[in-house]
Image (cartoon, rainbow, N blue to C red; front, side, top):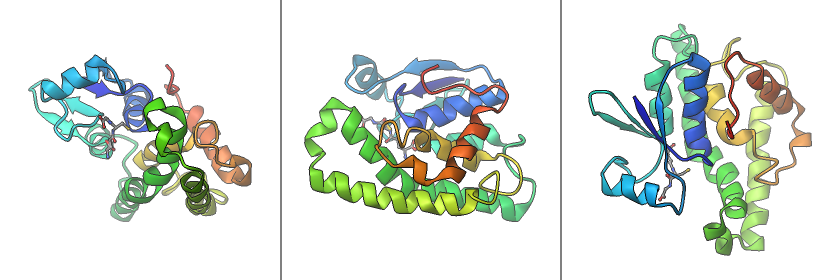
Length: 201
Ligand SMILES: N[C@@H](CCC(=O)N[C@@H](CS)C(=O)NCC(=O)O)C(=O)O
């Protein structure tokens, strides 16, 4: 297997994290923003939707979309609940991550971190993203204040998925994480899982 992966991106990191937690071997090909490697991967049609991550299977099939890759790699592992309702609830959090959380939490960080995005970081946009992000983080806090994990009583793909951008929401995104102590404890629990690797590893 080969993972076309952007080192700085939470979407790519969540896949690298699951691979590490599962102890699975995978060749990692770095395709960072503003590099020839990213353009070469696009030109070679390795990124079907023009974005990383993409998992390339040994038979050559390409799987784009971070959460689809999590589902593929997670199939039959301890990170997918056996109970049908819990499995659907796990997917619910993963859809929410893509259609609500990522577009605010990841985008505010991207506007601050990537030089080619800074021109879009107007004060009005940053203030709006900050307010919207705090509302979204409160949704997670409401669950995690009273539960160890997002679904059921064990870590699932939902936790790995949402860890991707939430763990840098303060340092990169400028969100006030001290307002969310339940999220803080959950981040610590994930970082303590056997096999855990940080985004810089
Ligand atoms: N929904 C996709 C989003 C992937 C995505 O936006 N990837 C960005 C990095 S976070 C990318 O590869 N951008 C390259 C480009 O736009 O040229 C996923 O979850 O995999």
